[in-house]
Image (cartoon, rainbow, N blue to C red; front, side, top):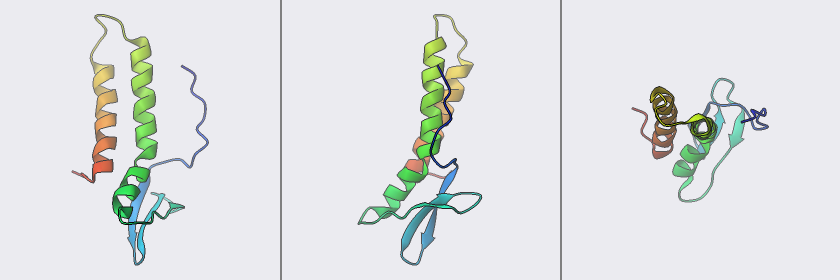
Length: 96
């Protein structure tokens, strides 16, 4: 699989509460990514903030699947699934 450089703002992205709601910003530099609106803005902010991790987890799962053969080691799958699980937990608001 080719590994083109993504054209989005690099992650990680984090959710920050503001007086007006929530911002999604680049974690280390606080570059604003978006300001979700509406009744589900906190859940939407969590989903958006997980986008870079979701993208990386899916890329890794696709790469591991492409190399998978019967009898292949389980470790690559385990690492990819761990990344995917962390990204899903971030979307669901589980920071533990």
